[in-house]
Length: 398
Image (cartoon, rainbow, N blue to C red; front, side, top):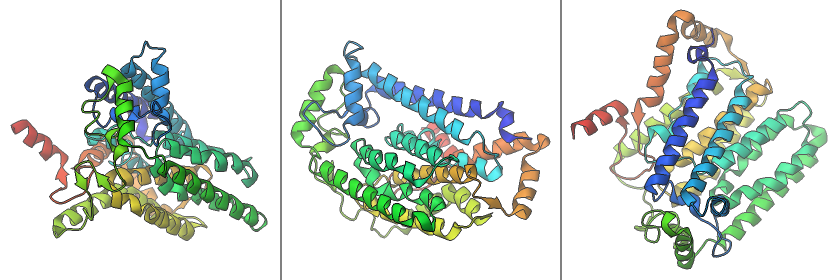
C-alpha cells in the first residue's frame, strides 16, 4: 500500500501546494506587502543593482499588462511556483517512498514552511531551488560525466544576480559530484571546483560594489508608481538597498544572537532537531560508500553559511534553504541508487504504518508532525517555541 494513494497520488499533494501558494501570492499582491511583495520588485531602473533580476523581468513584463505591476508579479511568481512544484514532483516520482521519506517531505521547515509561518512569503530562493533540481536531474542521468558539467559551472554564478546569499550555498554544487569522482577524472574535478569557486567569488565581489544606495530606493519606488509596496521608501527590502552590510533598518544588529536567555537557545535547538529529524534518521539507517564524506561535507556546507547568521536574524530562512538542498540531495541519492537501508529497522516501521488499515492514522500523524510546532522565522531574545494549536487557540480568545 502506497501512503500517498490515500490522497489519490502525490499529484494532489503538490496540487494543493500550488493552489495555496498562488492564494498567498495574490494576497501579498493585493495588500502590497512590504516584504513578501516588495522583495520581488527590486529592478534595474536606476542601473544594475543586487537582487534586481526577477524584479526587472516583472517590471518589463508589466508593460504588456498596461503597466500593472501586481498582475505581472502574480503571473511571474505563479509560473515559478507551478514550474518548481511540477519539476520536483517529476524528480521524485520514480522514487519508491518509505515512511522516512514522507516525514522528510512534510518537515515543517521544508515545502510547508511558508504556510505554517504566516510571515514567511514564497521563498526568494525558489529560482535557486529550481536550478538546483535541474542540476541534480542532469547529473543523475546515466549519460552524465564530468565533462558535461561545464555548463553548470559557468551558469550557476548567474544565480547570484537573484540573491547574493546564494554564494554561501556554493558547497551544494560540489557535494553531489563526489559520487562521480574517480582517479582518472580527479584533475578535471579539481579544475572545475577551482573555476566554480573563482566565478562565485568574482560574482559576489561584483554584487558587493553594486549593492545599492538610497538613490536606488527612491528611483525604484518611483518606477513602481501606484503599485509600489507600502512604506516603500522607509522600510522593507527596497529600502535595504541603501543600507550598509550588517545594518538593519532599525539600527546596528551587532551580536544580536548573544544573550543570557538560555531558554531561547534551547527552544531553537529543539525546533531544529524536530525539523531535521527525518534527515538525521535517514543518514543513520542507510548505508552507502561515501557516507562519511557526504555527512562531513554537509556539515561544512552549513558552516560555510555562518556569515549569514551573523548579518540577518531570520535564521529559520537560512536553515530552510539548507533543508531544501539536503532533501533534494537525498532524493538525488535515491535516484542514482546510492542508498541501501538497514532493512531490519525500516521494514518493521514501514509494515506498521504503510498498510491499508492504518493509512488514515499515518496521514494524521504526518499532518500532526508538520503542524505541531511553531517558531518565528527569526532568532533573538524573548522568542519562544510554541505549540501551533495553542497559539491559534490564544489568538481566537483575544
